[in-house]
Image 1 (cartoon, rainbow, N blue to C red):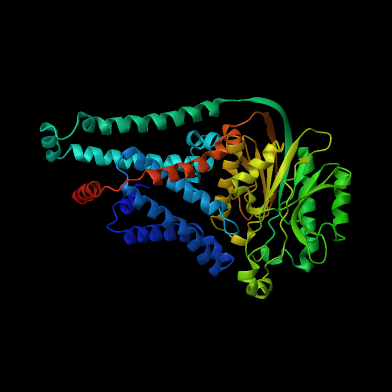
Image 2 (cartoon, one colour; image 1 turned 90 degrees about the horizontal axis):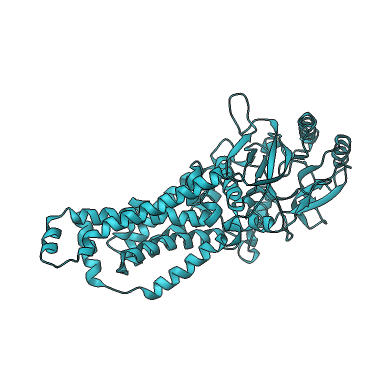
Length: 499
């Protein structure tokens, strides 16, 4: 982050700072969201521009932070600005998308990743920016110490002894924060917790190409694939078998083929969680997950709450209503959003769980709501076949990793084309569906694992989820505190030029 922060902070004008934010944001999102071209070139450009707007806002806030005299307040300003922009781009209605949060860059570093069980992904993003800004400030201070002019001023008493000690104090504070995070991570890495039970879950990865997924002629083939893989999984003695999002090629509550599935469930005597659209009436449909008990009866249903704009519905009809005929001709669905945060209970067990459909696991608040209602593990059923052989499934997996860490519960993923995986409460991917060569997307298979159901809470669930909102308040307070200091700005600009 340092080159970006430095370029924006030292920009010669506000317009240059905004340009820096725009270029950085557009490059990042254009590359990291490039997989959207498999759905829509316009959608790729549109989403990249929407997400870039928050980089531009961040650049503006960093530039305005130059008016703050005290270095520690400036660093806090930058970090709080980042967190504010991240939660705005995540939580705004309709177009909110917390995809590729800054914290996800630490997915593979367990000791750092585990800080999310206290402050969440937004909080970890705050810390990353704070560390980068602090490193930059330390570099600036040490650079000043190396200049002869500085020592001359010090000898003449024009600078206090504190100025000499400042970079060392800053470095000590930075080291303390990093060490504290590492110790926190090490403690939770070694913490076993009280295991109150376990459960064996099987996930089915049908690997159905998107182009034939809703083809009527392929319906029998698709059902045969899922049913055969499910029957093969029985030898692993699972307590629950999970099919991905929209795995059933029709409306499960209307289609006659659902009777075949129910008959199989009744014969296997194992509960199933099945992704399928639900037809409420001729005008109302939901993207749903059905719980089918061991007797072959539907015992519960969850309807997706966060729908994909322009994918599952056309938002803001007063503005985009004219697009509906075009959108529907291109295959855009017309789903209604659900309103109930359903918690399922496995028969003959105290195992409670909830299901997240498609990209719902990227929204931290929704996962936390399910766990607060009693879910002891989370299922993610999704269909990422739209995005072909790209980085999208791997980016999606990172979100599930952080939901597991934040809430201290296992996360089980069942994806049509991958990545189907099992994640423990520490965010470790303990296994996934893959072939003999280790390929985990666009492969067909099934996997059964035992997941631990631990008792316990996380600081994030209790209080840490409030962290980003606290940063918004702090940013507002800093805005009110900010003082204009032209002389200070001139000195900072001169120092930057000399470097």
